[in-house]
Image (cartoon, rainbow, N blue to C red; front, side, top):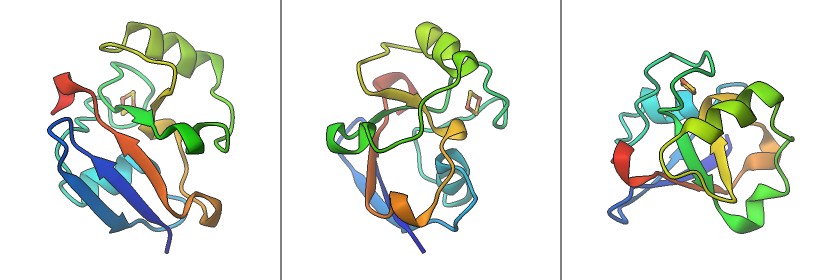
Length: 106
Ligand code: FES
């Protein structure tokens, strides 16, 4: 199973196994990782599953759809490497992925 590392805004790091085909958001929610609220349950609304993808991983991810890009615009402190974790599906290629949570979700 791919390992995903979630880093809270306070620096606390959690590395967990996440099943293929779950989203990065679902992996966090199912494992009680703080910092990903996912209020809309994965519907690409509210942007409370916003994460900053580690720089070296960002270009390896599938491109964001327009709906995701629009939501990132209204997320808290969007950055160059922002993605919505509910739009990232876990695959073997994402083994080792590192994401950081913004301060408002921590
Ligand atoms: S879970 Fe709501 S935008 Fe991702």
